[in-house]
Amino acid sequence: MLGLSALTWFVIIVAGYALLLLILPREYMWIPFVAVVVAMTILAYHIVPDETDDLYRYYGMLDIMREQGKAGLDYIVNLNWYNWKTYITFRYYFYFLSFFPNNRYVAAVTMFIVYALMFLVMYKAAQRYQVSKGYVLLGTLFFLSTYWFYDTASGIRNGLAFAVVIACAYYHLVEKRNIILCLFGYVAACLLHSSPILPVALVLLTLLTMKFNSKFINVVMILGLAVGGAFIQFISEKSDNEFILSIAEKSENNTEAVRLNTSTGFLVNIVTLVIVLLVIWYFSVYFVRDKETDPIYRFYRYCSTTAFFMIGCLFSSLIFLRFARWILPIMGAVLFMVGMQKQADFVKKQPPTFIYTGEKKMVLRVRTQGAMLLVYFAYICVHFLYACVGSSLIWMHF
Image (cartoon, rainbow, N blue to C red; front, side, top):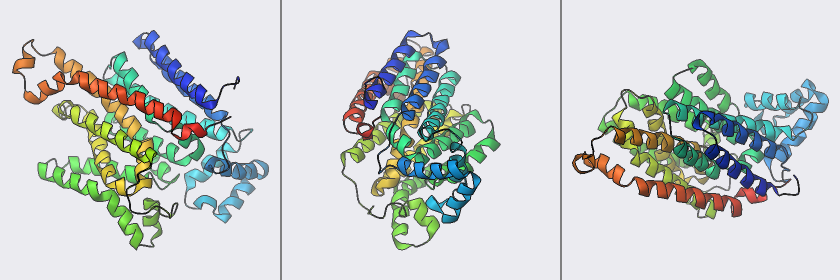
């Protein structure tokens, strides 16, 4: 577009979003949110997939359905391409997309849904807790820099399914609204791809463990989650059950062994997990303090549960990478924004002598606030640089 590369446009969009958010008053925060969603949609529309991308292979199926209509859909289902007999949502989502005039709308519509859902979650959290504009800027930039744009646009199913699960989890756990719609969303996501079965199961596990809120249960849960990912991969090596294999993703990538991946991309995702774990620990005192009155604690518990599960997934790199690319960015953003605002609100209520006489764990957080902000901002910059020179964004072209 206009003689600029796709990567250049991505950088322009992120920079333009940040500038617009800084300029506009907080009550107009929705404008840059809508603008970045629309801009990412337009960028996705112009992407040309490589022959190795899933998106390129999906084009062939869309051409068949566009030419033959329902008969084309039935033909593909009968051949069971991409397990269409099982993944009902996948089947009818692509049938819907076949009514658009060309194949470019596949990535565009998908990215619109994904970014709209993610920015809706961040907007809802920012409005619910009246998060200051500076914290909103940092949180959303963390999301934009760590979220894998091209992998979502070229793969379609994973990013879309995870986005639906996360949006449903936030509304289910925090807003406590549209529960039936959220349950429908969980099911629809699992019928789009097998991967969302795990984050949906973690929602159920979170709700279950909260009913038995004891230190013993919490310790058992942490230990169980820490080895959970490795256990799933282990049983997949010993089993030929299709359900187990689909959860472990072994059926999609038989070359994945039970080993710790040392590629640059994998190590970067490990650092992202470390940053999110730091956010979870740093703000834990504020979320736990209000656990009886504030529903954000339920989302905090879900994020903690997911993070500990990912530790075990280090030995199952494909599962870990999918969680890191499509779940950690939004979790790290929401917890940071709300946590920083909770800390600011807490400090405002304290007497001037609090820094000397207050509870040690609270004083520690306040004293190290600058360090926390510096680490978070530094990682945004480092990961954004990596995204531009070493991530899948460098493969993106028009």
